[in-house]
Length: 270
Ligand code: NAD
Image (tube, rainbow, N blue to C red):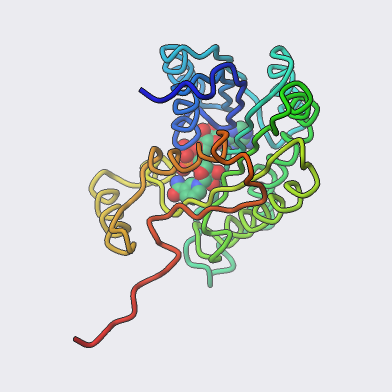
């Protein structure tokens, strides 16, 4: 059983019906936080996440809202306002268009860029804009900075990812993390995690079980730590930024990728 070190803290995790967002939400609930679970279309999965959080003792609200719109973000802020403040915000919602051959420029349209940018970059900005007074309230009431975590990707650091558009949005999110960490201090800390591979529906929905298993073992083989991450592996590192253990950390970007960004080890003649 985890320490209840987040008892009474109010947390919003966007895109938390599934995958990494769900895993982060459950880890926060385990440590005593109350939760806002957010989804767009995945209502059935969101309800499952809510039920799991409640089982862990968390007061939990479900808000169906699109983070790429001002109306959606206003709904999220309204839910948090019922608590009077927000201690933790995780900007996890994200989308991609799979276009893995980065030389095939025709694989992406202008609309693909706009859609991906709207969710992955404008989304976190709009959520922060809507929630800023509630995050500041935490600092005013407790003297403790509110914690914001942006879920980015190593694609934003290496330029290699599911598409050129996706990598560009995560690069932008990393830069926005720096801008806002500087601008919103001391009331709000803003950090980012950059996962490598995460075994979620992102891949599982696009291939059969056999193909997925082959891909997962290929990923594990290619990383220095010989591991393919699941949502819990990333969430364990992500939660660090949402607890007092990181109280003096802001503007940081942590790569959580089993060493994937290091590439292959140089061949050494033996
Ligand atoms: P996922 O599809 O399970 O999770 C993404 C969630 O975001 C979904 O629940 C989806 O409904 C939600 N979402 C999408 N658009 C939304 C919107 N406009 N408003 C609100 N919610 C919205 O996939 P995941 O792998 O868990 O992805 C979570 C995050 O991790 C994303 O930001 C993604 O870019 C990042 N990431 C994933 C991988 C990977 O390999 N899967 C690698 C690096 C980073």
